Length: 259
Ligand SMILES: [Zn+2]
Image (cartoon, rainbow, N blue to C red; front, side):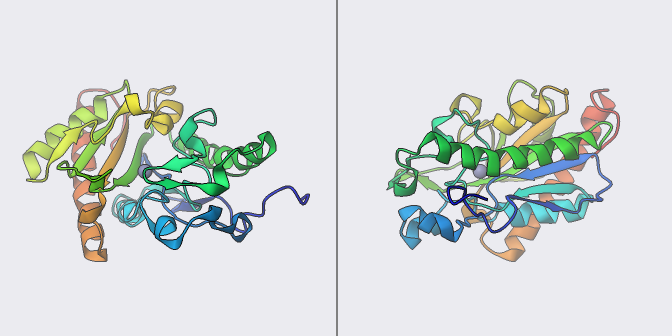
């Protein structure tokens, strides 16, 4: 490694339950707020490094519970989205943001071509190679990504509690929405609090659409998953929904085996 190359100290991706038998492959891009020492906190105060701009609080715990419940492999990021947001392509402004909500990110301002390339090659490329590899091991995979969002954004409260997001393939989202309507009283909405027009469906576009694999992005309002008990309950709920929704689209002939 040359002096110019960053030392991430840990691999940028972690595989949970690699031998999982389910057709379901889970992805959690924003699982961790970790910023390696060599980046000097990206110049951010602790308040910002622990905030939702750095990661999706609670999402990994829900994804891990889902992985366990459904015996599904989970691909999780290990580094902060502020270093590289693995749900954005390299040419997106948000891939290595200079500003996120109310915080400037000093360590991301005017990055050189070499600095950008180091993060793309060191974080984005291996993360997406791992997702592709895990999907390729399944004969008829189903892709679900797990995220959380902040209850207030730029000072405005958000009433939606669960967002079910999709790109051009609506099959799994449609089935999940009809399942959700049968099951609970949470506020569940399609493509909310944002959607594909906001550039948030990169992982679905890259890994779900080309192979025609049913795919979905789950967004959970993070105030609902602050304790272990809440995270487990949310994971259990989604395990039930995904199982039921997968049976529904399997019965419609859209997939060959259930998640
Ligand atoms: Zn996220």
